Length: 119
Image (cartoon, rainbow, N blue to C red; front, side, top):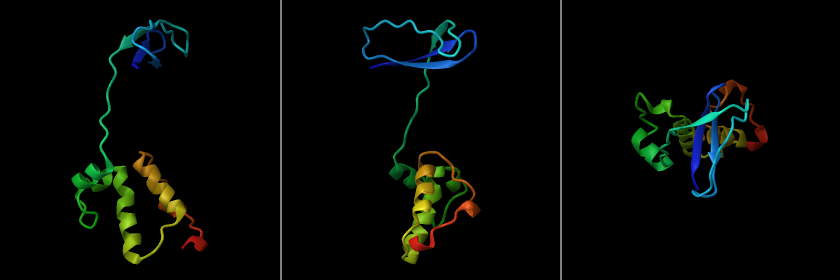
């Protein structure tokens, strides 16, 4: 099931078109302006597992210079500290870590207002 990308010649809007089969012919138009589109070469993504990110990042106790540049490592250090202190992590912190691992950088830590009942 191929996925093709197209670029509008009028408004430069990039469009992705999913096809159910290779035999199906496609002639899309721009969803933004209705203009003519031409097929472009798609970029590709390389996804690493969390384990390979952790292995390449090193130990959170002795992080290297680039350790915190990967948002997936942000919560790793926090998780380790909560574990060392024998505390359960508040759900808000868990949500922030999950978001960071998915590529969303968390907001300012000062905005975190934990529910004291969770501590």
